[in-house]
Amino acid sequence: MTYTQAQLAAGKKFLQNSNVHFEYDAGDDGYDATACISIDVGGNRIWTDGSSIWNNSVVKGVKVDTISLIVNKYEDDDGTYYWSGGLAGTISYDGSGKDGTWYDGLDDDSDTMLLNKIKSKDDSDGMIYTDDGFIKNSIKYMEEHCDFDSSLLSDFLDFDYSEQGMQDDGAVNLDVDMDADFWLAVKEDMDEEQLKLQAKAFA
Image (cartoon, rainbow, N blue to C red; front, side):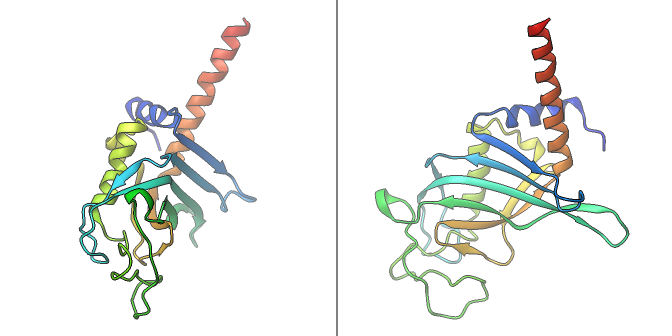
């Protein structure tokens, strides 16, 4: 696929941010590849808006450590491949309740359709899962602190809560939509630019 110079430039600005790290593992045969974009949030707060169906309309600034967005390469029966990030991403946060941050509390013993038990509303803030504001504010954080261009959302990098409702203590699971081929092209451009600068310095 051909990418525009504007798209590549926006991708480079994002990956060059000091809070953003890109890793790629080609795997053994090219179809076990993994691509990961990790955003270091450093304990800064990302706010919920109280819209989760699994808590008591809790609006809080959640101390987030890392947003980790991962996709894996799979091969179809016809030999074509695709990138999939189902259940592959996480937002890691402080669930201790200290300093006014999110409090995970205890697991609820009631049955639930979620893969993880929901959090008791009597002794915790419940679950972040399904809170619209938390995802929107995570993307907003990337825009404001990581040079992320939201025009890349539709085609190259996006995420939302996993459909299965996975949430562990201190980590919300995400389904990730990432065109890893694009980010590899961005990284290749960055590496070429670096080589040219090095060659110029030694010329």
